[in-house]
Image (tube, rainbow, N blue to C red; front, top):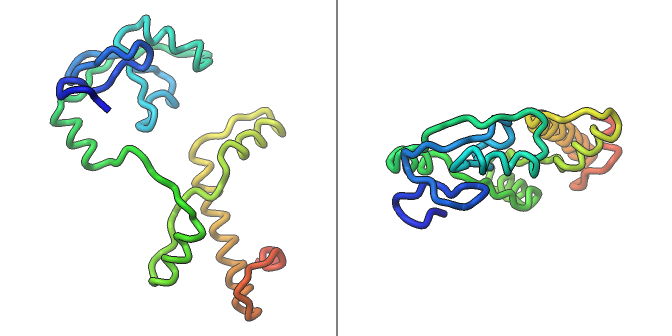
Length: 164
């Protein structure tokens, strides 16, 4: 996404280029410095413009140094930036047919889960909850699959979950 070989990123507010190895500012809030988001600002003023938009209650700007071009290339080569989630059912069927393991995709609708927890308890939901719930859903599904097979069916039904 960079425009030339000297630009690491663009400022998240004003879109000015931030060069490799240059100083930049990062938001102290954890959701802003995840690899998927990684907001970077060329100045404290640009960071300050981001705070009301993101509705941070308590935040500050951390000064950081952009990676060198070589460091960035190495990082990009080892960690893909995006995860594409496709049709989980089709992927699981294809994996089962070729004898491989089922994919470890997220099985929970994150926004709906967070909304439910907020509405019923006025609490927030940590990101690590999603993986734990997906694992529990997988375990429930595995039990239901076993029940359906034992009954000689190729269709998992609601009653298979109540027995597992």
